[in-house]
Length: 465
Image (cartoon, rainbow, N blue to C red; front, top):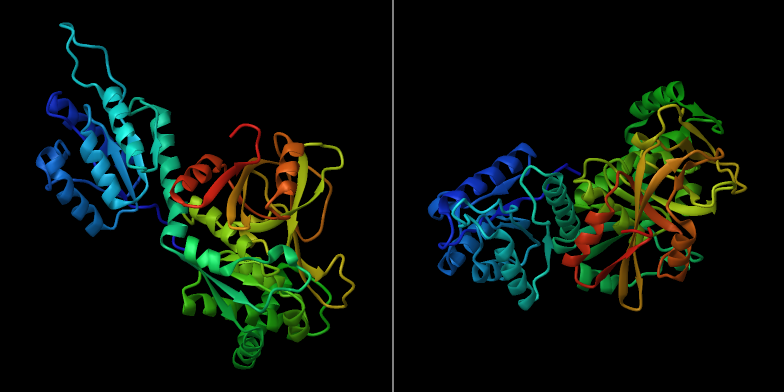
């Protein structure tokens, strides 16, 4: 996916009873900061006098301007007080996430007069937004050059990016049927479509297998060259011939073509056993490659694919996520747990790890193709979109990688604040062992996003949100 921040509609507000010059000064300071932070925005320059909303008569022109520009979020900086009625009407008509903030007021002038009453105006506007049932994000009344302002804008933009997943809709390719014994991945597809704009595209496994085999026939020589390069770069064992490796590369390319053809944001793949039997190998290297660009959930986990997409969006698509799973607790650390699965993006590999393609460590199969490497160190956010009986929740947690015993497949040990709390929340549901992970800390933005996703409730795994 292309890395991109949401487009912000910058709607500065003033009021006739306070200093217009001061309002213009702060509007320019906000514009300069957004430009410095490389935030894409559309403002009201050339549309309204001084580029400021000061009256309710400005509402229709502003709404039409922002609609035409296709904004994703609305920023309402109160530059000297605010115009509460206009704030409410603009936000209500646009129906996009709204951000409320105003600069902290300086001391009164020597004669006791004030240039602004920003805090007062914010209290008035917030009441109107509440009255109209309009969700909004609030940044504390702070100065333009304080960290709270920058962090608040960043959190809002990430929340908007996640909300857009459901506002604009996503498409997930489901290849093959759900595996019978994975009851945990039974989902309500109708609910996802009607409530969250998630479209599941069913794609036949037999057609997929035939198309992949045809790719091998057409691209045999090119694939042979790539296999030779893989054998030189990685530790590969368990293959008597190159044919299964050629098939794995074809699976990778077939997945990519389907994503492009159907405009997919991700996949939920049956994973085994049909594809493995027909390809003569576990196709996990293909999964690793595809997941660099598209969300990828094994074992037909559609909710898992949604969770993966959410974490990619909260990072503005700048880095991939990985659908991992909670498996075992750390043997010595009571607050650490193993994140483990297959198909991790190769870019998440620990820099000291050499990639290995070999046998499955637990399934009694003569076939090879499992990809083994430890994931890199760093801060981690995990998230799981899930629900039963019409109630949907987003489990959110963050922690830090830690040292632990060596494992096979793709793994890393995660240390959190209080694992027993995490465990109880996850067990008591509606969650399962699969959970998406991404590097970086985004819990605040994920929680904030649920304000703008009707029917989705944030659940904090950490003791302190």
